[in-house]
Image 1 (cartoon, rainbow, N blue to C red):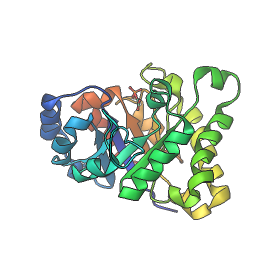
Image 2 (image 1 turned 30 degrees about the vertical axis):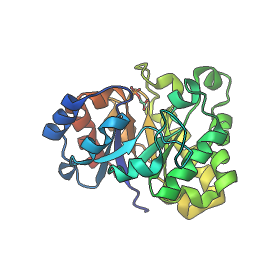
Image 3 (image 1 turned 180 degrees about the vertical axis):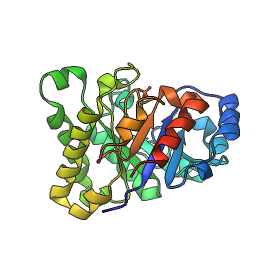
Image 4 (image 1 turned 90 degrees about the horizontal axis):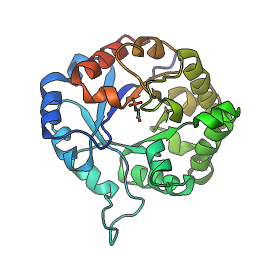
Amino acid sequence: MTQRKRIVAGNWKMNGNLALVQAFSDNIKSDEFPGVEVIVFPPFPLISDVSKLNVLCGSQTVSEHDAGAYTGEVNASLVLELGAHYTLIGHSERRTLFKESNEVLVAKFDKAKTVGLTPILCVGESEAEREGGLTEKVIAEQLTAVIDKLGVASLKDSVVAYEPVWAIGTGKTASPEQAQQVHKFIRDMVSQYDESIASTLPILYGGSVNDENCDLLFAQADIDGGLIGGASLKPESFKRICESAVGMV
Ligand code: PGA
């Protein structure tokens, strides 16, 4: 059986401050979770501080540009220089609130890889799309945007996160079976291009994961960890989720 990376990633979104960094410093130590990569995605100004903790660090997005007159943007090489190893690409809030298209996201994904950050590509359907039976179509489009432009090899040493939009921040999590079904769809789809990349690709579930529902989600065959929003702001809950991932097979 292929051993895939197990990952618990905390997406702070536009939350957190130096006090939360300190609380993580006091409570979350990666070393206590053997076999699990613990990653925290704070707002940009905290990347340097979080990178000094006993966790890995990532940014919530990066610019698709190298440098220059792009007021308010942050480039991937600076994120790397500040100590981060990962970046989220295509979180649903970036897609909807900031109107990031598949085309722009492919450019961001490419830039992250080029500078040496590991991208976590977020995919997922809205409630209306699920109700309309379009879940697989939407996810296939989001994935093929990357594969068509950058090749399936770009998914090697990358990560995918399945985050149904209707489950993000709503308390309405996908059932373990619903999540597993989509994770398997993603892995099967990548497998049609390259079996070995598919078998080693970590696929995280995100959307109202908490310290109570994580065990059943993490027990699913194609779920390799979680992308945690709200519960990542509470060190005690986040710690419990990291502990749950230690037990994953
Ligand atoms: P949530 O957010 O855990 O608060 O639903 C997940 C995410 O947006 O990554």
